[in-house]
Image 1 (cartoon, helix red, strand yellow):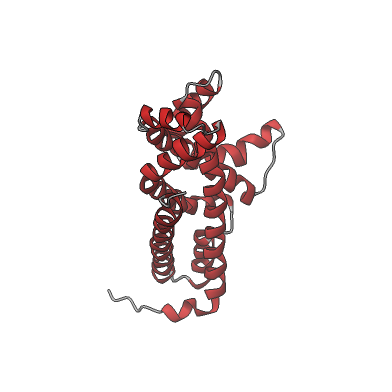
Image 2 (cartoon, rainbow, N blue to C red):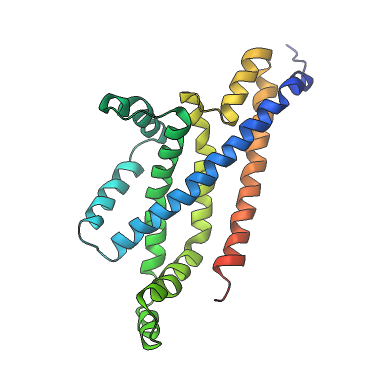
Length: 221
């Protein structure tokens, strides 16, 4: 059996792939900003044992880290409308990715906060730093610097996981690939190119995140 490759069959659909890739980038960017903020709040609540919030985030982390992302996505998109909460595919995808990333970032950032030596707090207090300055310069920044490679890896995992959002018709890269192969019936070529775009996005995203860690987080104030 021979197979004749025909990548030219993808030419009429290159704009769909480009738009899909841009929407994947948009999904990832929004989810990263909101998910990291949620993760920092959860990490501080758990590391400093804040009343109520510590328990709330503990339950949240256990639930999210013990259930598949696809189930979380379906629960938000198909389950919540039963309670009167309706979202379109784009909104549900962002919410699911934020919740998923937030849970993992909570534990990653918490590890960084708990690794901060007690002496640094005392040194900051001796310099008469305000609470906000202590949190920013002594707690958060060193913690993020310490765990940033792990945060970057988790962001890439979430970006790649966004491909399942095509299951609820979110118009991202995998959705575009499914649409194209249903029109030209060139599944191998279509998904080969889609996989190549994901590879390029993952490498580029890793480089950007690591650059951010070196240029911003590791920079002396």
